[in-house]
Image 1 (cartoon, rainbow, N blue to C red):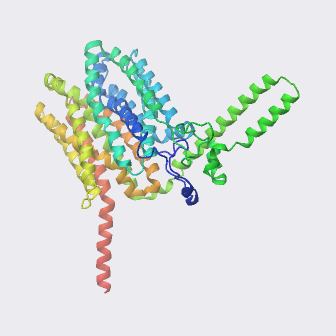
Image 2 (image 1 turned 45 degrees about the vertical axis):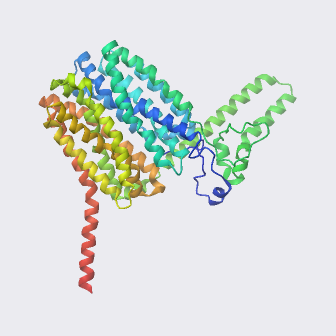
Image 3 (image 1 turned 60 degrees about the horizontal axis):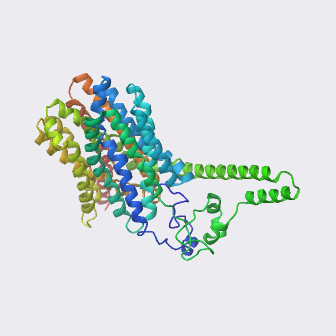
Length: 510
């Protein structure tokens, strides 16, 4: 999604001559690339799986703090929403620091948010400790996991992304069971403390995201271990257009040479060589960090704010409008289903096999199945995408009518399977804007999904506080979701009408 000069395995710049001089890295589509997939898989388990299991903690927070459902739901929705909303802005950290360090810092921040939330005195404290801190850390760890898989794969990119994203379904199943067990045995505060320790494994996942560098095969300097691939600096990458990729790792900034000259002169003059060397090293480090930050900011700004032409595409604007309503219909059942089960006195049956686990398992199967069907030559990706959306919105409308465990299980199975259309979103986005704008456009779509996840669960909670029923929450969200789906159909209908009019005009003219 974001292009970092630290992780490039192929030359993606628009310079055909340089593309001819570079060979693909031996880890592309194999080797260490599968370790990156494994790392991304565990990131999805720890981040997205944990967020989909927050309904367990939502029940505990309602019993502990005795606040309204709308206010309490803000804690979970803040964490989910910020994870996606900050997506375009995390690109600044990726361009500056690389995916590895961004994931490690995000893992530390996420773990800190979980641990501090164990000591929260009220819901308002959870807004900052869990909603903001843990949500921001999740965003910093989640997006690099998606980016690195794209950097390491070319021919098998779709397969690799599909395998890594199945961690969301497995994580939802595992984390729901884990949080239920921990809350029952140790209480929700100790459960969050233990989960914070588990979240430190995100740092291990980040350490596995070894960066790639653009270089020729067999081009190793004397005494250099060929297995260790040095990451070029931003300055050397910037100068590669003039010096060639083979000289990139040997390029030295002019400022560094001047600093070395000053160092030699002062050493000859015997003027406190040790202190001057320390000062020069500090100046050198500050200069390099400043250049890295400026270069990363330029790449980030041009990548997102330089794409205004995307918004002239009416179909893409309709797709953004759809994304603002779509994700909430998938998130709301995860947050409020545990309490709905308590209201219907189905706790014993739900403890045997939770409804959220049914959604998670069918979500995995839906991703694989819908992706396979959409790849068939006689099937349109758009048709599969729209049919899955209509199935999901129909399931949202039917859910309030079910008051038995069997009925709820069937509807949850439909929700899980139809929500597998998330694996088709990159393909649909590419059809709308083209491959050259895919990364920036998909970042905007994810941000819109984050807004949907942020506002959806509190809205459903507020409707319950007013009506004392969850029925109207699902009905209203389903209607809004339907409006988003119809927005996708407006432009194709307009085009069909225009084509029909042109056909009549041509026939009349003839």
